[in-house]
Amino acid sequence: MIGKIATGEVEDERETLSSAAAEMGRAGGKKRAENMTPERRKEIAQKAAAKRWGEKGA
Image (tube, rainbow, N blue to C red; front, side):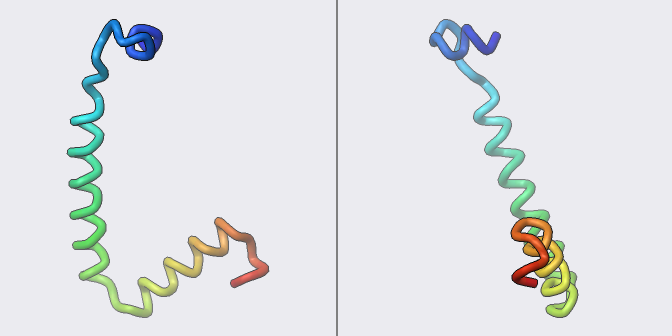
């Protein structure tokens, strides 16, 4: 199937599904952030940065 999509024999139908899922994910993320205190958002952001960049910057 992937080969046929790559060669253009079959159209990739997943783009519409992934963009709809992405929209719902963004909406969910905004709602989640609204319900959190600024301190909790900061804590989560710091933890994510430490995981991504290592403990040096945190």
